[in-house]
Length: 143
Image (tube, rainbow, N blue to C red):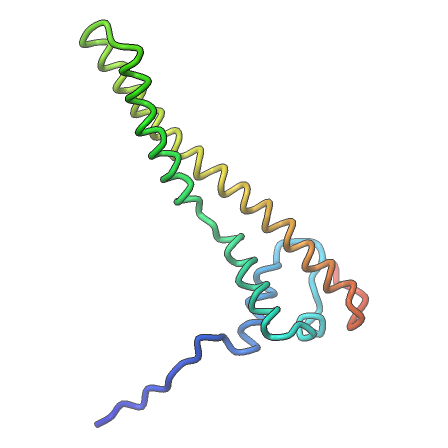
């Protein structure tokens, strides 16, 4: 028997896209009215939703990995250039190398998350401002 699996569209329905947009801009002072969101065409709505969701959900893993890799290369080179006075010095240098690699990974991740959250905040405010300036509904609901 053949199963009745319906092919799914790669694009979300209009209702799903509008809900995703309202979710993507949530967290600020102004909230767009549904009629303002409906004034966006499908392509613009999809583009804005994708961009805001990417900015809001960035985890910083790639930047953490790159900064950790850079520290993995730089720390042993710096440790070797300073040299160790004995076994105890070599252990201290190895611990400093490990700490710098871990610290670089955490710093890269945290800085990237903060930068993307700031970019999300700025872009969300621009989108809300553009919606408020459109002729559909000139007022914006404040929470």
